[in-house]
Length: 141
Image 1 (cartoon, rainbow, N blue to C red):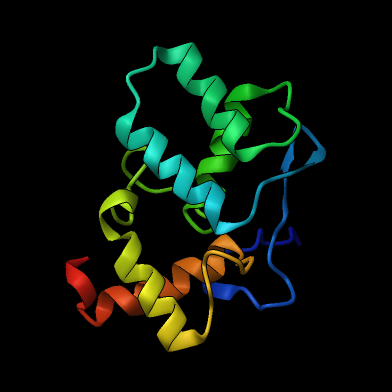
Image 2: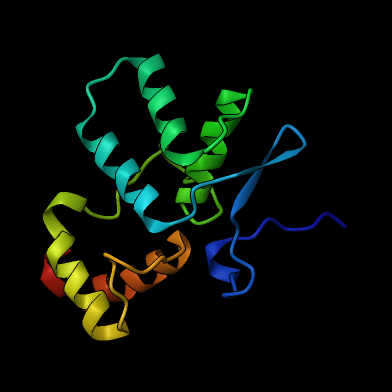
């Protein structure tokens, strides 16, 4: 029986992925929420050409860029999306990071005691907590 890849819906705080498998080898991925914010900001504002865009996205996610760049991009997007690829398109921003930073910062600090300026938070945990934030209608996200 093939082992299921972890997804955001089945994670435990002890089993959060910090690497992805590409070409039979595991590569560390930048798992902190700040990488995802940099990714969203770059995608939202980039005017780069295809090759430059791909290189920059890979640099955002990987300390060591894998040789199979297409699979590396697929795995980075899968990681960003919580372990599964979106059915349509490659990228769906959760919010505009530039517009919502202050509200999200205050929510995380007040609700969870997490200081996003100093605390390290796994991207999947950040996503789950952000979903609660969004469901509450906070700050118009």
